[in-house]
Image (cartoon, rainbow, N blue to C red; front, side):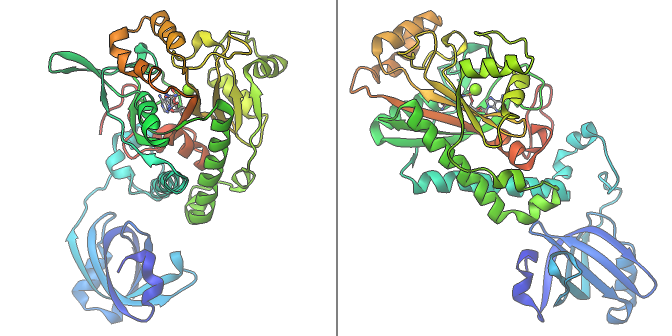
Length: 427
Ligand SMILES: NC(=O)C[C@H]([NH3+])C(=O)NS(=O)(=O)OC[C@H]1O[C@@H](n2cnc3c(N)ncnc32)[C@H](O)[C@@H]1O
Ligand SMILES: [Mg+2]
């Protein structure tokens, strides 16, 4: 029996195959908390119900020993999950000796070095289940709203987000890079299928040691033909609202375990506020920031802006000078581009980068040259502007930053099973 299905087995004798989460015993009774990955069950071992050797074995159980435990399932509202087992038999598969992550407090470095074990703890268990619901919601929303999954390559000859954060590899004698973003390929597939998305790992050799940056992260990237930057924002706000609502509905227990107050998430609803970069600069300056027009926003600026709103806020029309080559120039103000970042509230900052793509061949070629990119490497991408070019837009949502916001975590290190950070690739 799996623990999360215990309600289906009240009154039946069942066996749980799991690990000792915690145990304590007195003279005549022992309480063993067993976890099996789906939940935790309180198992009550009465000395009178088992033979002497079994009760002795129970009294010497150690944390994280692997066991099979058999007994009758009872409803018990005081027990975790509302059920408990009255034990008849226990089999110890492997006694864990000196398991390093004890219930006491441990330092982050120690926990990160033992991530392969830390994942078993209740808090990490809850965070990973919330992450899984976020990932499922992403796929469900896009699959149910006309988007086709089109997997983008991980090995690429092209930089998408600038050449300063590439992980390069030797590809049979020619340079190749781990994908920074599947976007350029999405634009090709969007011209074939209309609305597509890719969903996979992305890699950035960022030398940023911050609470928001990973060197490997997961990103979902929808792309839509015949879509302008504002319509792109419409899709994003419905998408993000759906994801939050799914977590609130399906992961109440896990949100409680990590002590995440759900009330800020309950305020997430469309429409999301939209401010221009110009307005954002004025807002920052009014709040005392030394920012000047033309400066990019860092974490501090994003935190300051997002703390002004209860919903995620779009900041659009950034200066062209520090934005990617593929972004469409804003006809109303050619110094800016038709992009929009989505900043999550509660100080979490950017969770989505996106915008409208340059669809004019000549203008895009000028940007390729201006960025010093090798035209031959982008000829396929330029072709998309030769054969039936259309206004098109898309975005990339970072899974880990979204998990951090929804779980209200202080650092992205807890948002992935095995996070990859600057100077951190073990385990
Ligand atoms: N299809 C597109 O239009 C996506 C576009 N090419 C792109 O990659 N935009 S982005 O660089 O802002 O990254 C998008 C999101 O990807 C996340 N991201 C981006 N970089 C990181 C790092 N280093 N660590 C964690 N998360 C990261 C973050 O949420 C960003 O908002
Ligand atoms: Mg960005």
